[in-house]
Every structure is written in structure tokens, then in C-alpha cells.
Length: 356
Image 1 (tube, rainbow, N blue to C red):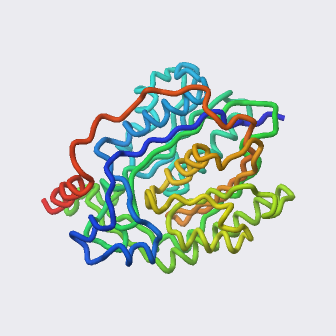
Image 2: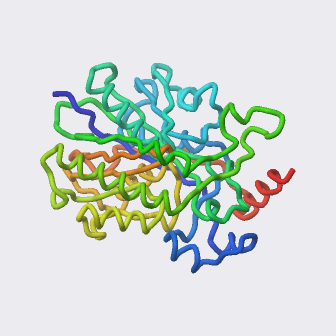
Image 3: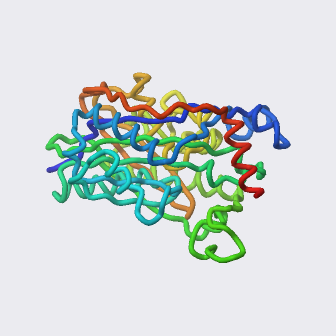
């Protein structure tokens, strides 16, 4: 039986760090308030477009796999913060990489976009449509943020990561997934200002207002991620004791702890980096997985559980069996251009643009 092994991985985080103390200079908040409710201490603000973040992450992932861009057959880009909606984000990355043979498509299920993209690429490899794929999860949420809304502006940041999948006869890669959507709760998380309904003379496209019902989202997120995790483990005849590492969507530390408790997995086997980056939407899971590899938390043949939720309210859980190799075959010299402003200066400019 054909499987889709993960053979390459790479991430790209913008260098500008926005701390809780920075937020307190223009919001009625402080470090204790943010940390006690979210676990977040800082997040990243990008000085470049999403395509630039993706180019670096993808270049690093391809180098880690030892795969040339010209050999890539499929690019699936998971995001909800496109540089352009037409043409799609993936085609821009294809062009910048020189991956001229690659079919290119976007997937938007908000924070679950990367994992839905992973399912898409996995299915196309296993069905024989392509032999390899580059799967990207990246967001530029700060560009769309209502920075004066404390409920959301303390939560989100920018980032990107990518994985390379390649066909194999070995039983590794994505072994099982459970995808779903709690659409009854979709009105609890809405970014007003993104979509054709806002293309009128009353509102400039991208000038957003956020609807974010925190308690309702918390309840439905924990339920969805827990249910998906239980079902995907059951489908493979496994229990929580069989899981070596959980790499969940990094939205809120309290959500992560609640899901781990329901799943019966101790926090020692849960990878957490929400304190460093906040919620990067579709980028959280792949960035966390790359960092788990870099920190030696992923061992050869490990079973890894990836639960997530997003606006919609989409939810999912993916079960991965890692292969033998946990170190990259090569390294890329791709880097972002230098940033000459602090994160607070970047955010101040965004706030001023919104006022104008």
C-alpha cells in the first residue's frame, strides 16, 4: 500500500517580537492579564508579505528532503490571510520557488487549513495522482488585525512552516485523520471585512472588525479537538498510551491543557510553544512540529497526534507515524530581508493605516 512519508520540514518566523509589555502601551492590559488567560508572552509581526515567509519555509523544507524545486509535483498552501485571493497563494510560491511542474492550490479552513491541506496532499499521493507534495501553513494575521480590540489583538501573530511528503511503501506519514465542522457555532468567530459581501463603498476590503466569542469558542474547540482525537485513535486501534507526542493547535494554553486532560495525555507529552508565538492560525501546528524536531522531541517511528480547530468552526485530528530520519538531509541559505523596525513600530504603522 502506498503511503506519504514526511521527508522534509522548514519554518520561517519574522524577527520582530511584539511583547505583552508592547501591547500594554496602547491597550488596557498587562503581562499578567494576558499570560493568565492565554499563556502567551510574545508573538511575531512580519515586515514582509506572506509569500516571502513561505518562500523561506518551503526552501528549507525542500533542502531538508533533498528535493529540488523542479521535482515538486504539487503545492498545497493552507491559509486564510492570502496576499491575493486571485490568483491563489500557492501559485505565487510556485513561481518564486521555480517549481514549474507543480500543480498549485490553496485550502482555507482558517486555523485548521494546514492540516486540511495535509489531508489533501496525502490523499493525492496515496491515490497515485502525484508522487510528492509541498504542504505549507502560513499566515499574516497582523495585517488584518483590529489592534484596538483587546479580545483578539493579544492572541495572534505571523509565521509559516512547510512539510515535504513523498510516496513510500513503508507504513509512515499520515495514517489516519478525522475532519469535521461545528457549523452551528460559526458565528462565534467572524472577521468582518474579508469577503465579497464587504466589497462596497461603505468599507474598504480588509478593514476588519472581529467577532470573537471567547467562552463559546473555548467550549466548542475543546469538544471538537477531543472528539476528533478520540475517534482517530479508535480508528487505528490505539489509546492515549500509544501516542509519543501531541502537537496541538496553539491557540490558548488553557485549551491545550483541557484537550490533553480529556485525551488522557500528560502535559509532558504535549509540545507547547504558544508562549513564544501566540496563535499563528494555520501556521501553529507545522511550526510547532518543526520546533519539536529541532528540540529532539520527535524520535524515529514516533506516533504523533495533531489536533486543531478553526473558524467555521472546523475541527480535526491527524495521526502521524514518523519515519526513521529526524535530521535534515540539507540546509537552505534562504533568509528574509532585514527588518529595520521594531514590532511595536510595525504595529503602530498598522494602527495608523487603519485610522486613515
